[in-house]
Image 1: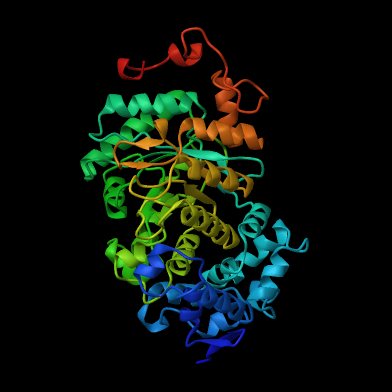
Image 2: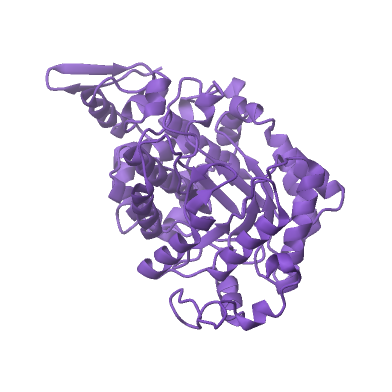
Length: 473
């Protein structure tokens, strides 16, 4: 196994494996210090980044950071690697690959063709030697289209997940948040609820409620209850109206085991959801992207399943899992796990840009839950910065929660108003099918930049006159 080294002044730094080199080269974050894999000084980090820049991309195919024989995620990465697609950059080092990505030659078409040939470790390594503006510039070139009842990820578009969570799953409370979000133009990525009571009967009740609303108003969007994949499978077997299958995933087999899943159950769930053919409800084209995955730096460490790797590299490996199942949506819940893993606003912003870059480079419809917990050294101003730069970078979707405060999960994220801000300031629009619905329902003014239509009494007439129950009035 090669030994990697670099000399800074009179000091020579040696790194005994690619795994160690990747960890030492990572921009500073609290989780890597907690795992005892971080660089011991800024000097060592710089030396590791210089050494990493000289590593051939092909080395990542020869030296696994998690052993092939011990980990099904590694086997997935290696066994599905597209050597033909990789040939275009196979002669480059990490540093030369960074330079190519920033060049005009690496346009959206070239990057889309390359994606199957890249491993997560290649993407992670490259991100570690990039400035924030590099991560933004390259990610902006990539447009990953996915589709169910509407189309996510088109150029000039920013979608939102409408997240009407309630601490007791109260129907009236969920309905109020749902209506509020729709009236601000949120919900084109998905209407997704984290259930407070996570069992199959409750999941089915919430699915039926959301399905009734979507059908009543013919909303070109999709619903999802963010329950365990095995609950969703049971709900499908019982005839529930399942649009998307949700699951949190990680970048190692041991992390996924801690979540109670493996690759086989994800394949089973995807096949079950596809068999329902629900993406054709409001359009002639059948949408076949039926999976919704969430990830987050630090999940492997919290499960003691990181194999001595840094958290950002393991996070990127989760994207290989996601990619294999052709999802509609993938998002990093970037600051949710807490300051033990991403200590402050600076670390959260950097991690969000890294995750978005790596996901897009690997061919994913990548979004971000721009969030923090109340005990982190971060605030809403930090989230405003991350929201803005991710919007510039072409992020596919963000979260939409009343007042940016999730009263069920107890964390701070982005609000319906934040989505309006990003769309207006950056000239972004909702998914085209959803935008047409907003205009038809007289929620958005036609051909305007996320401009809300004005109505006496507050509600658009067509919407107010057709609300099916007092709980939604």
